[in-house]
Image (cartoon, rainbow, N blue to C red; front, side):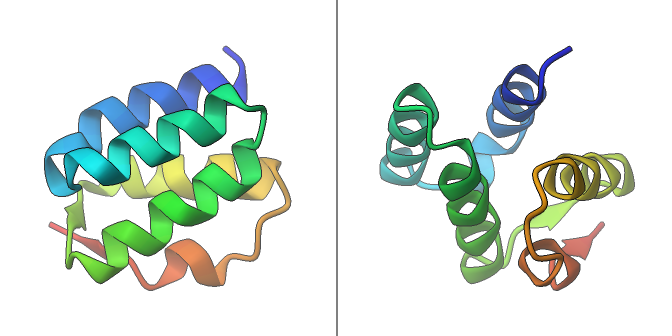
Length: 81
């Protein structure tokens, strides 16, 4: 499965922790082939909204971020359930 597909599934799973505007903006970035920017934005919005992730979601976030060479600081501050 591609990183984009994995990220879209994760975004759908986590969409209730974000605003509709956040999800729309992140989706637009993905559609514009700005996957890295979309991922960074996703992590920042989760953090700013105080969202919690399941341990499995956090592992997936880390896996996607690592595969895209994103700075781990984006997801290391996220909280699990």
